[in-house]
Picture (cartoon, rainbow, N blue to C red):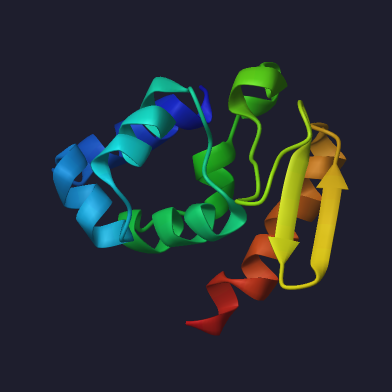
Length: 118
């Protein structure tokens, strides 16, 4: 599944509408609709928030999205590198290839900088 399908699947599993999830995440409904349509992808912060709100590991949100890195790339809010996973936190910016190892490192960064700080 793609990130878009994963978000939609987990949202529906929780019985949430797009409006409910957008409010819980503090984002616009338009942003969430673009995520679910696969037009854009969430940032590392967005992945962490989705994980928290939907009660699933970040790895489940991005699971199997590596099959189509151009349409499912995770991008930072300040820009993107086509087909790359981009993690940003303050002055730290890491670009990773959409490979198994890249996803593994990306997940560890999300968990370290966002999920473990709750």
